[in-house]
Amino acid sequence: MARITCEDCLEQVGDHNRFNLIRLAVKRVKQHRQGEPFLVEGKNKEIVMTLREIAAGAVTMANIKDLPDQIDESGSESPVADELSAILS
Image 1 (cartoon, rainbow, N blue to C red):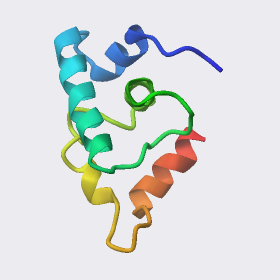
Image 2 (tube, rainbow, N blue to C red):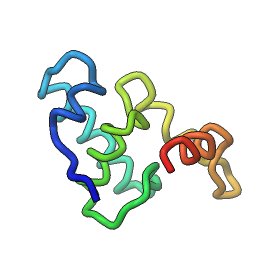
Image 3 (tube, one colour):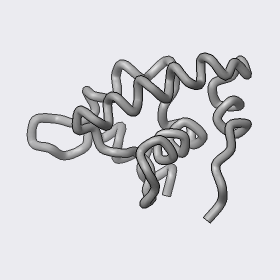
């Protein structure tokens, strides 16, 4: 399994600003703690999984507020989340 690095995540954040990366990661970890599923496969701790989501481009500053809406009432992922899972697999 490949290691995740801050540089991988900073490339996805776009402005190479570590403060923005931390803000994004904290927002996503809070979402996970409220029951949101991970968008990438893995068995790591939540912060590592969050960084994997950011490095994969699944979590960005532009879509962080919309991610909780990707799960519908029936508990299944929306087509957007399914599409993202297919891309990341």
